[in-house]
Image (cartoon, rainbow, N blue to C red; front, side, top):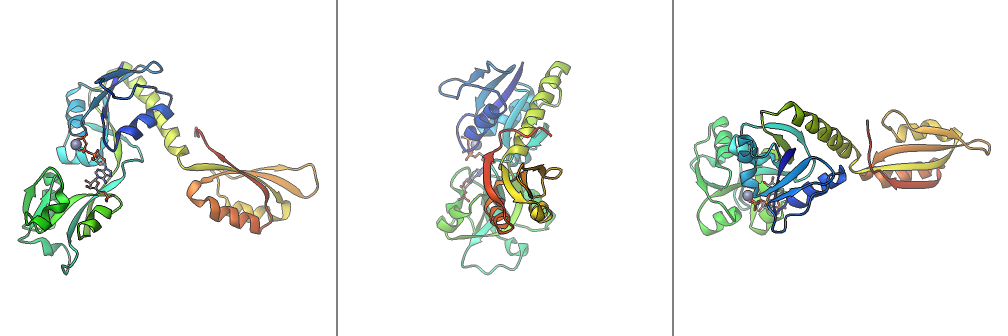
Length: 283
Ligand code: PRT
Ligand code: ZN
């Protein structure tokens, strides 16, 4: 039986649970429960604060965990990162008051920088040979310059709106992060079989995320053009239609490209375009 540590509430909770659900693993959401056993896979979820997840996996209380890569880097945890999960995407950046002139990382020499990520920050400052004072604070880092605790901040940025709302400007991106699946370094052979199954399912889930399945009718004369517009996994599937010089074309595309591709396909004569969600792609 595997045990996977998941954030009990916060930014990664919902997407961690929906990832499990999408790969056929149902667990109860963390209401007042610390542990929840799945009825559909030999795994139980252990709900924790994200800060505790790296240590719990390193120590073996949980075999697996889902946590931001930023936490692993900050704690220097001795765990294996099995795969990136494509959600919880953010970056750790340096930001300064927006009115300041900025001429590169040397700006930080002799300045105070507020952060909850002192280890990642110190490593960066050392690599750039910068002598700055690191002020460790655990919450609301973005208000530090306004209240005079620091001259700059080093914090998580996602949309950037928190920085703008606090009169700050992002000047250096230091670390790119997203949610990752981590594992204890000592895995029994039985657990390894389960983990391999889990990774296979996650892989197909990751590949199919944000994909659309397109079907359309197309004049045969436009086929070469259409194949250039639709670079599918191998090449699009083409089937002749009963009537004359037309074919039916099927392909998988990135959802982000949908409307651009549809416009291009219409322009070369495509008709009856059907767009469908993709549930799973098993490569
Ligand atoms: O209670 P617990 O300790 O479990 O949670 P937490 O409050 O420590 O963490 P939580 O839930 O805020 O974040 C969990 C993880 O989500 C982080 O470790 C990151 O890996 C990831 N993540 C992704 C983020 C963000 N995006 C994010 N935007 N974590 C925090 N933020 C905060 C950031 O600190 C800043 O205050 O959002 C603000 C910036 O957002 P924008 O969109 O305004 O730039
Ligand atoms: Zn936390």
